[in-house]
Image 1 (tube, rainbow, N blue to C red):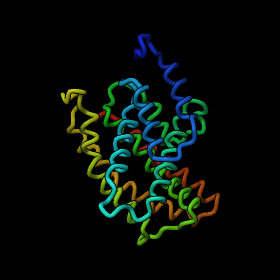
Image 2: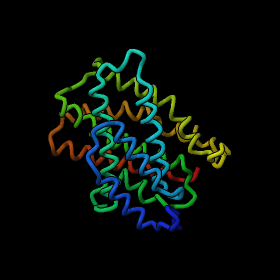
Image 3: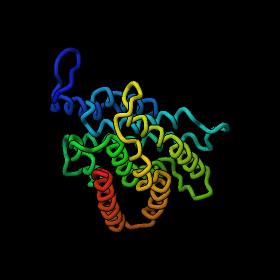
Image 4: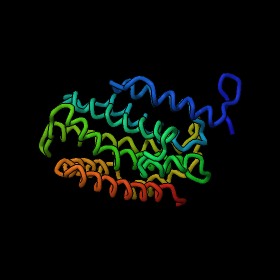
Length: 250
């Protein structure tokens, strides 16, 4: 079914054409640009597209992190900002590659993309399946790239790790509320079972996933190129299996 924009129907192929244009636009350099791109994607995608619900969740939590710095500020705001932007580029690349070169898309992302229009899956399931792919697959790579760009190797007692943990706290607080927002209608009427939120969060914990990504990045640093490739392949397979489990009926 098409959606309507400016008085005429827009079919799925037209939506994906515009999605390719959005994700192949100017290189992102600021969090404001990241949020703007997510807003464009949100405006484009119809409610029947599962990607819309991960994108919306990602946008909501990014806005919250951006608007809720600690009272004394971040210890290393340049590092944290760069990490957020690099991290977002992995999401943008996953969408673009799925629509143009699907063979190169990690299996963790395929779990979500292949189910985009599958009936019977709740919005919150799509949202968490996307977070699973983005954090469990992409975050360690984003950490490595950011640290390399800034010539840093942050340890567990570093200012960067402290900021990372502060973000974990913000996400733990905002994620249940954001998922509940996804499960309600525009006027606040319940459209999906919010009881699923607790059950899904019991399966997939954002702090645990992010902490594992930090540890995995440290592990990857110590590996040869061949060993690193093998480790990433294994991690991608595990993440894909978890993503598909999050998309099953509960």
